Image 1: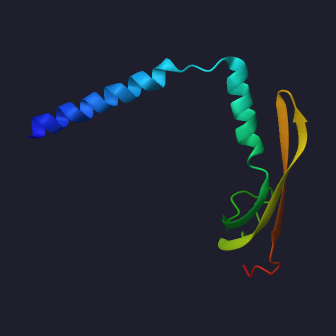
Image 2: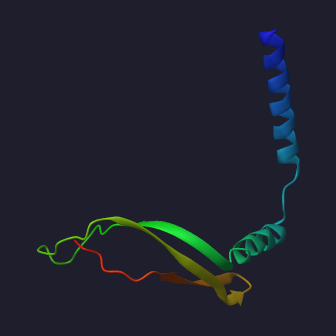
Image 3: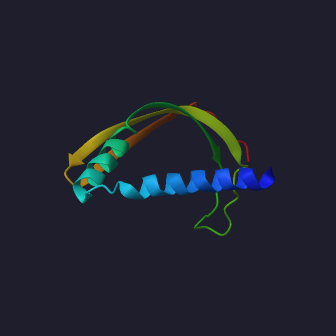
Length: 100
């Protein structure tokens, strides 16, 4: 029974691999798919993030304690050229003082 299951799984994997290799996008199609995927990132997001300082130019600088926060992010396409897309990210978070 285990041997039969192994054969079925291998047959399925070979079939999936053959199907994946039969469709090759032309470079123009790939570029358009990539552009569409990148442009779909524009919009509004509720985000959570971890904040922690990792470097300081002044060796005497005292790092703040790491913390978690959340906010709202708006992403907007500001440049949309044939081979260049620029997305501007604007992040708004609650303002508070971090006590080191």
